[in-house]
Length: 393
Image (tube, rainbow, N blue to C red; front, side, top):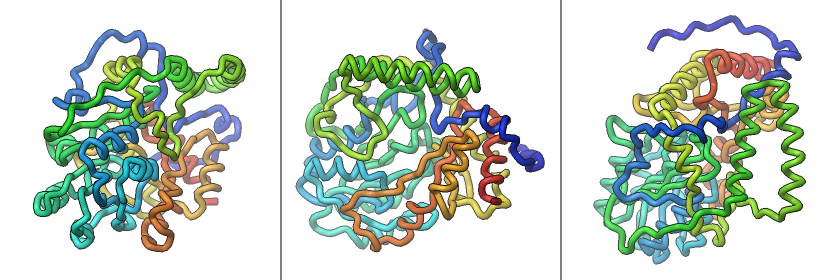
């Protein structure tokens, strides 16, 4: 890749900063709804055995019930979102946790030492799109007759070599709306025969789906049209909240920390499938990688990168920025128009405090910086300057 030119760091002007809005996630445009072209489907959409659900957590729950993992324990990384653990517990599984290192690395030998007679499955999270030790996990699973689950919620479109993540284990789960501008969507992929057929899941409530679509479109309006878009978004959001309140619409929220059994059998909406099928997957991968490389180059003087190398095949979900005060950094970046996410601040309470100090440091320090496919090099330069200004203060 060509060396990235590094423009000089310049202070922000308040007017320029206030006019910008860099959202944490990609947003919907109306052209995506009208697009009738259909690109060749990428994995997992073209998997021979795939089941689409409203949430990835639904897929975790379905998987645990389908393969009767409730009869024993599942080894799960101590660094996790929390909702996947809650889904496993609700399905009757006993989670046991294994360490994750300061750069989100997993030691398969440590995991192997934790296998015991009650262990039924190994659960591996591919953090931020970077492959975990799949060969070692598969070998360990084969030796002990264990079920191997890949959690690809953060790793849509990532590969290791020529092979997509999610094809190494017995099964894999994906969260689609973290990478694509769709209102809902998770996927369960089976790479070996199921003891029962994959369930047919009903459509989610149409009003809830439309509510999420409208929110994403309004976010895109502010992102693409600056101050005018922000004013329109604010006015329409106020009207929308009133309409939703009066109509009594039940909005099935995404991005929550908890698993709800009543939503476990909700499927993915048809409109999510339509928008997903219109996406330029090679372009998404290329732009995310370009933006990751750009930030890695521009932020090098602030300290070593949390993950040193963007390896071939990785479609990164975001850029992990390690900071000492997440709340302050997040607040200051938002004032400059850059929306970030406090990544995995809290895990599931079944993972006891003090047991995994490296994980606690990651939870305390890692901030999610957007690098998604909507962002241009000029906008990434804006993000880099904002980060420099905040951290150098």
